[in-house]
Image (cartoon, rainbow, N blue to C red; front, side, top):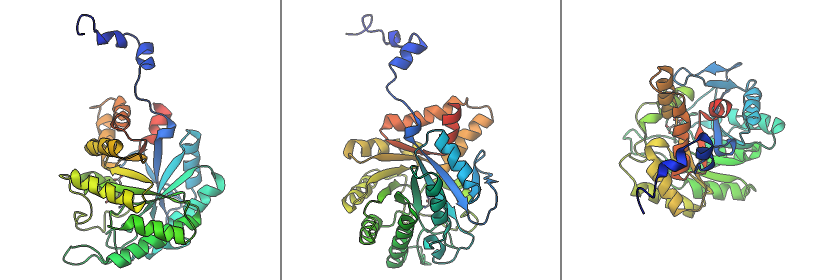
Length: 325
Ligand code: PBG
């Protein structure tokens, strides 16, 4: 068949027909809202590079979470900003660390909300790197110390009530190390969301501002995160994490790496998560603010993740989109 029997415009005649035939849908169930919590703040402070978003204080956190819950959001991902950083990032696994306190607060008031916590050292080290003792020659980390610290973080998160631990540092061996540590500490119910396919990306700039790592971090993350040139190597990362026991797989950033979202979807039956990162947010936000893009660009960008095959989307637009459409 072909024209004139096939006229695909027949599908698109009215808004009702278009809605009825829509192949892709977005709802509150699709979203994970990122929240930055700073230990040293007493009230929310706007993040200059991410207009519309703020770092929360522990006291402002319940209102922010309540907002998410009332929009139907089922999960948040927490990023902590400690008041004190040191070379080994020891504040990351303190029982009264910022993420641990935040989790207890949230679970107290919103027991059904799924709490995911980013598990990495870069917000906690005074050098801003994702591991312990970055060597001067730039060839990586003291891996034993790094994996040991990540295990401590994961266990302290689990003790505080975190549902899903999300190691974001792309350190080799993280997943099997954390699975073993959690299981032997009695936390076999805690899920691991692996940042399996994470690129050394230029799109993280605003996050470093938001997470208070921008001022201290010198260098790059090219020794442990993937190069934007790599596709097959990303698939090997995912395969390793699957074999090590990852429960969920993430691709990050999202929009520049939709090929990897599709590849993971086709290859694995694990839940696939796409992270629309800070630079993607800032870019779309700036386009809209300058009148260059209409607000519909937000929905279109989110729809792309669903079409590419992701089950869940971490997006700084989650609240705004669910509020305004
Ligand atoms: C920590 C981490 C980063 C992001 C999430 N977790 C920064 C990085 O890897 O440099 C970036 C998220 C964003 O840009 O929104 N390792």
